[in-house]
Length: 232
Image (cartoon, rainbow, N blue to C red; front, side, top):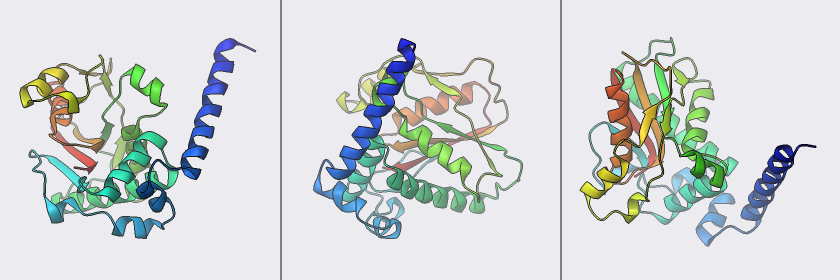
């Protein structure tokens, strides 16, 4: 048996054991409570961003839930650090509802997969360390939904080309912008001229990450780039 195969097998086993332990012993009371609830009960505990608007968002960025809430924070942690299947489903349903509402309002329904769904990427090192990218999981789930699959095409066409410091470590807007400047690049050979793109991420605070990704896509010829996140 080849060494890389053995390593991959141990890595998968470790992830399965981690998920089992995370389910049996969640990190805090809020996470454990959410896992015991039905999908509808979970959604009822999450404050909608449109109803609170406690954190202003730049134009073109839309978010489903207000992040400054213990249940929303627990949902995001379960998604980001445990890739919990139940939470991923709840999050996907909330995002698809938001996107459908937007599409109906803006009359984007063309029925020809005219919109590319692009997740915010992690660096290779980040993804290897965590084992998954929660933005990719959300984006793939959206494109697989029966009510959306005829209009969206999953397109992981952005790459994070260098490591960055955590945005939460940056003290000013200028520092955050400098930390992310030039961090994204379009995959080699990809053509997006004239395309409409929906960027997907789990959480946005200042919107700096999404704005930098949008800048990269617009510079590569995208017609319109809008951003949708689970929480803000």
